[in-house]
Length: 191
Picture 1: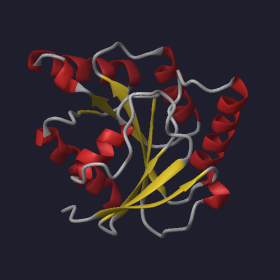
Picture 2: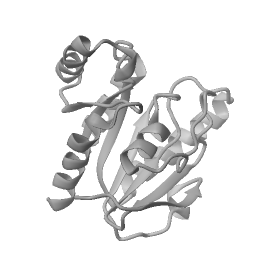
Picture 3: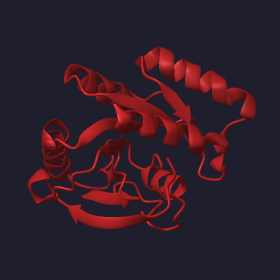
Picture 4: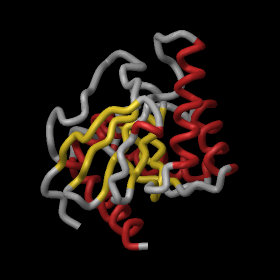
């Protein structure tokens, strides 16, 4: 699979406002500031397509991106720390649960976890929720440029052991890791 183009489709607050695109969809989930937007920009090779920010909780909507008319990335609000009220976070959670459980186009969830830290409690909770709801997912270990090359395979192995999921390393500064991720996405689209 070759990615030739990518474009932003829309931002929607809830499932009911997401357009039906008739393309396989990959929902990106992870803690606030784990690097979901950087992941999209790097995989599709379009700088600035998904807006990045150093402020946790900037993504407040479901952001949909069409990738070469082959599949869709859905960039979801991060879980964990965000400078918003508990009421707003609860509303996000309800909207996201409804989206993740009822969006027919979803082929896989992609859980992004920061490789520079141990798996956090809310990462474990999300992985358990995914498993409990029989949803398919795999993990991207982000920010591997922030750890030594010798640590990367150990971190991925530890994540796999702790979560029981397939793990792929990723760095926004080194596209070396992108092809294995693209191959995984391609494999899931063909199923």
